[in-house]
Image (cartoon, rainbow over all chains, first blue to last red; front, side, top):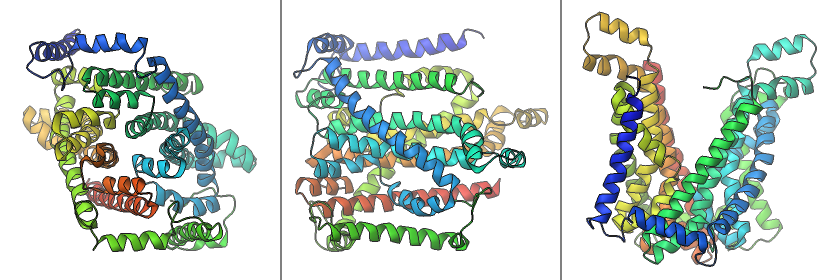
Length: 254
Length: 268
C-alpha cells in the first residue's frame, strides 16, 4: 500500500482537529480550559500586534538572547572540557567527580537558586540555561573521544603522528558526529529550560506569555505561547540537522 | 569513567582503584566549596558551607516545613514521580511495541507524536494545572508527558530492529503473529525497552522538579516546594539541601534501573 502512510496519517490529524473543534465549538469543554481553534487564531492576530507591552517578535528576542548566550558559553566550555577529560586522564580524575556530583540535579532545580544568586533578571536565566546545556555538550564530547576506534589511533601513531596531531587530526574528526549531535541535544535542553525559567519568573518571553494567559483566564493566549515554543524548538532542531549534513558530509544520513 | 587505551602519560595516582579516586575527587570538590565560603567569608544566605547544608537537612527530619518533615516531602515527590512514570510505562511501552509491530497503528499515531514532540513537557504545567488543579493530578500529567516519548520510541525501535531472520525462522516453524510478538519480538526488544525506561526516568524526574517549582506555593509538599521556600525566604541552606536530596533520590532511581539493565543484558 503506497498511500497507506499518507492516508492514515492525514486521517488521524483530521480526526484530532475535528474533535478539538467539535468539543470547543459545541461548548462540551469550557473555553477557559481548552480554547477553540478560532479563539487561538484570534489570539495569534492580537499578539502579533502587541500584548503585555510586547509583540511576539519581542518575546522571541527576549527568550532567544538568553538561550544563545547561555548555550554559547556551555558549548565553549563543555565541548573542550569533555574532549580534554577523555584525552588526558588527570583532567578526567579532577573533573569527573564534579560532573558526577552535579549531573543528577535536574536543570529546573537550579532556577530558584539562580534567582537567589543573581536576581530575576537575565543573568540568572543565562546561568540556568548554561547549566542545562553544558552536560549534554560535555558528555557527548567525552563519549565521542572515548569511542574513537583504537585501530585508528594505533595506525596514526605507527605513521609517526604526534600526540597533538593525533588529537586534532584523528580523534576530534572521528568524534565530530557525536559532538555535534550532543550540541543539538543541548540546544533543545536549553530551550526547554528557558521556557521553564520564564514560567517561574519573567517579564517577557514565551514562558511568560503562557503564564500571563494563565493568570488572566485566557487559555487561547496560553495555546499560542505553546505553539510558538513548539515551532521554534522544531526550527532549531531542523536547522541543526541541516548544519550536521554540511559539517559532517562523510556521515551516513538517512 | 573508564580507562583509556591510548593515554600518552600514565601518572602514578592513576594506578589507584577507580572508586577510591572518585571518592577522593568528590571530597576534594566539597572541600573546595567549603574553603571558598570560609576564605571569602560568604554569607550563608548566599552560599552556606556543606556542613550547614547537612545540618539543615538533618534538622528538617524532625522540624516540619509546610505540610511535614523532610520524609513527607521526599515521599510525596517520589509518589508523584512514580505515578506519572508508571502511567507512562503502562501506555508508552505497549503502544510503542504495537506501533513497531503493526504498520497501520504506526501510521495512525506517528503524526500525532510528531505534532507534540517539540513542546517541552514543562510547558504543559500551566494547562495541566487548569485541567487537573494544582495538585497530584497536574504533576502526574506533566511527568507522564515527559516520560512517555522515550519509552514509546525505544519500545518502537526495539521491535523494528529485531533481526528479521528470527521472525522468519519463527514463522517457518509455524508460529502465529501473536506468538511471534510475545515469544520472539518482545524478548529481543527487551534491552531497548529497559533503556527507554531509564531515559523516561531521567526525563520524568526532571519534569517533576519543574512541575513542583512552577505549581509554586499552591502545593505545600514536595522537594521542589522546599527549593522554592528556601528561595522565597532567602535561605540558601534549604534550597541547596533540597537540591542535594533531589540529586541523591534521582541517582538512586537511576541506580535501580541500571541494575535491571545489567540483569537483562546478562540474560541476553
